[in-house]
Image 1 (cartoon, one colour):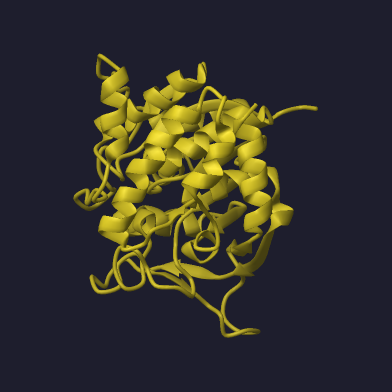
Image 2 (tube, helix red, strand yellow):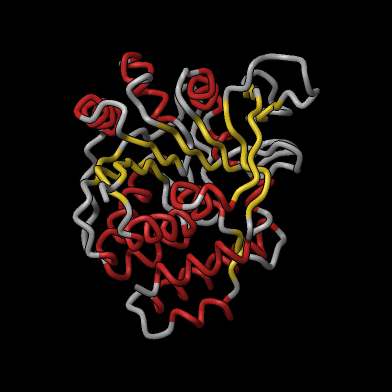
Length: 304
């Protein structure tokens, strides 16, 4: 079977790391590149973290760094970036920044027209920059699957906004307006799915057991301190898993616009849920996911 070609655009992050592991270990994809963006941490840290994950996996996927800041704003990083601490323990030199993620996206999509899906796990700055630089690649992009947004649940960055969209709402606005097939995995679906340390015991004996246990321990520590939850939600792995098993998701087409003006609601993904009225849908939204199926498949794939 021909493998699906993808680019992962990411800002690792524990859950980003788990998503990359899931993609690579599934053996279902031709990973043409990993592009990094500032979000969870600085561009130096996210690129360094991505190298750490690729080295853990023995992956030869090309790594390109991208935007060091949002399109029009200063970077507001996440509260916790413990993955950098783990990466520093095993990597002795800083990853060189190429700064060309948007250009590489354009090049790869042009080389494989209508065959490349973008898995966007962080702020959408790199993808927005690529679409802005070369609008002709928009119809040549097969699909964009994004982790981000909050539709009918509270935000995790302000009252209504999820972190990835909040960090660079102008970039998100540009991508949401682009005429390309889009799927959004928002907090609504992500809050259905978490992994426990007990469940991860099933990975004992695999090469990734110890690093994942270390990541999850730090992840849970940060979740308790900053998100006031004892659960390690699988935000980015759920976006990755959608590319493998979309049937596990309940979805609905929606028209969504991103708030860029109000500081109170900055980054809000405002969905038209009136029914029968409003604009045509511009994105398919995952409303829920089967946790049992996800956990089963995640553990089985990672154990390979």
